[in-house]
Length: 135
Image (cartoon, rainbow, N blue to C red):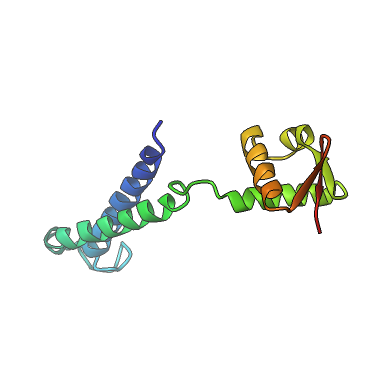
């Protein structure tokens, strides 16, 4: 399933729900039912449909925008590099690549890429199969 489909459905539900709530607010003049000797104002609620739909569209757009911020971002390599450094600190400053690939939340591809970057930057040194943090 495309990642935008659930996001679109959530925005649609929020927008339609907001429009219906606004319809109810205008129908009851903002007062909870049953209000003593007060009748529903269907004409006002009907006349305010453009405002209700505009409010629903605004809330729907906000939900779509808010839920899409993280979904559209690529994975950040600096976070993965910090995860490798933390993993090494927990292991006394050294680790092997198979340990990192199997015992960390990183995928094997992410682990190899982060180790290669840290090694190229001089933050890790290699001794055989063991990687060590440089101070």
